[in-house]
Image 1 (tube, rainbow, N blue to C red):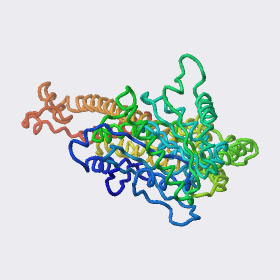
Image 2: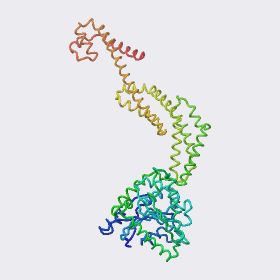
Image 3: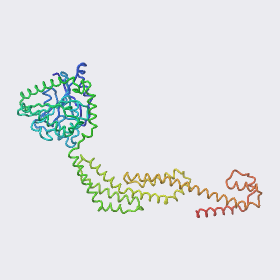
Image 4: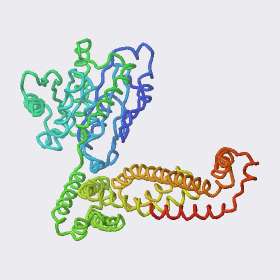
Amino acid sequence: MKVVSGTEQLIGKNGDFNCTQLKRLCSEESATASHTPCTVISIVGPQNTGKSYLLNHLFGTSFRVSEAELCYEQTTVGIWTARCISPSMIIMDVEGSDSGDRALEGTSFENKIALFALATSDAMLLNIKVQDFGKYNAGCRPLLNIIFQERAKLAQRRTKLIVVFRDCKNPDEVKKTSSTVYSTLKEIWLTVHPSDRISPKFDDYIEVLVEAFPFYEKVEYFEQKCSEMRKMLMWKMLSSSGHEGSHLTHTASGFPSVAAKIWDDIQNNRTLDIPSLQILQANHMCDVIIEEIRSSLGKNTNFLALEDMSDSTSPDTFKGGLNALLNSISSRFEQVTNIHVHNIRDKKKEDVVTEILMKFQDKFELIVQNKLNNFMEENKSLIYYYLLDGERHDDVVSDCLKRFDNLKEGFPTQYKKVFQDSACNLEKRVRDYIQQEEYSDKRIKRVIRHSLAKSLATVAMPFLDSERLYYVISSTLGAPRADSRCINRAAPAGFKIVLNQCTQLIVGYRRSS
């Protein structure tokens, strides 16, 4: 076998797909060889069961293996690949399942990489200890269950699932259990795909084979079994090449792009995101706290005080009671202190806070509405003095909105929106008030002009003819420019008396309005 030296990481620890490395690995050969049919072989199984060691002895690859006899740490992280040119193969070493290093993350990542291996491989080796096959976790039951369920959602093609039993005392006898292994795997398939006419059929996707290996310390016997399995794989792959559905891609050069598409589909599959036990415990603990909070609200003094507040309560008083209640709720959630589940705790706490805020939403809206009414009454005089000082209308409105907007400080975002909605109403009311005051001022001016004209006419009549009287009155009241000669000739002695009368009239009108 001719193997390209070295290995490349195809999928990283965090799920990054390294398409560039895979393309480089697949191109390290002649142009002719890169366009020949290529077989994809992968291996999955529990951590530290000798998967990388087996691949190295089967195909002459150089995957990293654990150096210490008693090694409990991960050796393979993600998926690593090697390239065999003759015969043309891509070999994938998949991170072990049931790893303590990923205990906090759940099984999401191991589900995804195992499904990727099953969906992209012509042959997938399931490497397990012979004594573990009937067990739940060590026998990969949860893993097989989820990847069998999701495999049928991807493109249909038949993969050889080769169950490799390790550490067998009598490998030849173990190989005779093929029918039992087939029945067990098919039973797992049927738990997620019931036996009916429309469900995907096990045999359309999976072909089961069984291989058995002795303890690796029996070097010669182990090497003999490797040689036998290698020949079996070559014969199986060559005999199926050219059959419809037997290969995902016909060439090594085409495999990277197709594999990237499949990994993208798998990454977007939320069904594979199974939480860890720690996350499940955090969710349960938070749910218990939530139920305790709900059941104790009827006795919570802060909650009862908020319920008793009337519509005339000031926003600041309401804010004080609300913050006291929310702080007491937050302190209950501080019991969930594990750093790895802070996001769960914070999300659950946020849900409870939202629930509490919804309970008092209507009451708070009435309090804000009442404050809005009082705010208008309290600020009418100030608004009018602004207008007398010649302030622009937009500046007056802006000042009112700013002072009202300051009231929302310290409230939750959900309640700040109530102030924002009320601000629209406030702006309309301020502008209506300004318009009303302007109209009132115009009425006053009309009364003053009428009274002043009447007074001037009475006082000036003995001194002026009708034409001169018109010019005097119009000039005095700010009408178009009058004839200066008429004004100079018509300076009535009682003019100051008339102005004093007009001033008193203005004051009286203001008081009455």
